[in-house]
Length: 423
Ligand code: HAM
Image 1 (cartoon, rainbow, N blue to C red):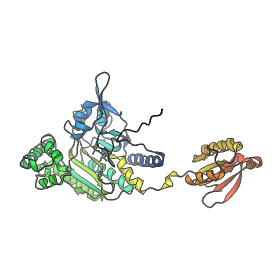
Image 2 (image 1 turned 90 degrees about the vertical axis):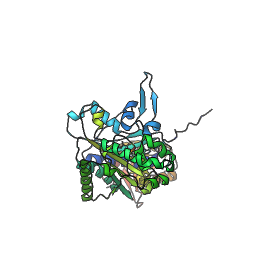
Image 3 (image 1 turned 45 degrees about the vertical axis):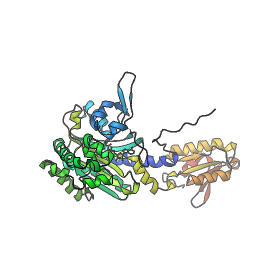
C-alpha cells in the first residue's frame, strides 16, 4: 500500500519552472550587496530560545505565538530562527568581530520560520535577505541601509513602492510616549478591537499599526511619538530625511510606523507595495543601538533591514517570461548507435565552452525530440543518426532561422564560440 505525504502547511516547494528565477534573483542580490561593500554571514538555522525571547521581546507576537520551539534531549530549549538580526548580533559578539574593525557591513539570504496563518505572501518557512551595518551611529548609515533596500526593488522594476520612515526615539522617550498613549487610549478601551484591547497593557505601541478601522478612528487624536523625541533624535531624523531627499528616494514620514520587534530605537522604516495584495510589507528595518551591548558585546550602534524574498518573487513571477528556460543546444539521437556519440559531443561542448547542452535520454522519435528542443527554447540542435556516423558528420540546425550545416563529428565543439554562435 502506498501513502501520500503532503508538505507541511505554510511551506512551499520551489519547482523547476521557478527555480531559475530564484537563482537569478539571489545572484542579483549577492552582487548588489557586494557592490555596496557588504559581506555574507551565515548563522545556524536554530539557536537557544532565550536569544529570541530576550531580543525580539517576550510580549511580541513572534515570541508569544509564532516560534517553532522544542526541548532538546539535554533539556535545552531550542528555536528555529524567526528572523536573523538576533542571530547575526549573537555571532558578532561571540566571534568578537568588533575587535577586528570599527564597522561591519554584513548581509544574508536565509530561511526563517514563523507559525503565522499562511496566506499569499505569508508562509511558515520563508526566506529573508537583509543587511546589518554594525558600528556607525550616524544618519548616513541609516540612509545607506534604506538606499540599498529601495534600490534593489527599483532595479528589479517593482512598481508602486512606498518608503515609510519614522523615528521611535530612545528607550526613555518611548517609555514616556507609551505611558501617554495608554493614558489616552484607556477611556476608549471598549471602542478598540479585541486584539488592541489585549495589547493595551502588554504592547500598546503595536496598536498604532493596527489595520482595524475602529482602532484607526480612536487613534486619530492620539499623542504622536514625534513630540516625545529628544533633540538629538529629532536632529538625526531630520538629517535622514534631508539625505533621502538629496538621493531622490521618495518617502513618507509616518509617525504610526512601529515595528513588531522590541530591539529598535531611533529610525525605523518599511517599504510597501500595493502590487502584492494584503501582505504589502516588502521589507522592514531600523536602528538597534543597544542590542550588541545587551548580548554581552561592547556598545556598538547598528542598523539594518530584512526583506521577504517570497514577496519579491510574487511580483517578479508575474513579470517574467518563459525565456528563462533557454538552453543552448539540444542533441537529438536518431537511434541506439548514436547515443554514445551524443553523450561524448555534449560533454566536449560543455567542457570547451561552458554552455548549456542537453541530450535526449528518452529515445523518443525525431519529431518528439524536436518538439522538446523547442519547448526548452534551444538555440541549436545537433542531429546524430546512423547515416551521419557513417559519414563522420553531424547536422547542426539553427532553431531561429532553420538553417543547417554539416560538421565533422570529431570536432563539432569547434563550431560553437563563446557567443554561442556557430562559425
Ligand atoms: P520583519 O518586519 O519581522 O523584520 O520581517 C522583515 C520582512 O520579512 C517583512 O517585511 C516581510 O517581507 C518578510 N516576512 C516576515 N514574515 C514573513 C512570513 N511569515 N512570510 C513571508 N515573509 C515574511 C525583521 O525580521 C527584522 N529582523 C528586520 C531587521 C533587520 N531590522 C534590523 N535589521
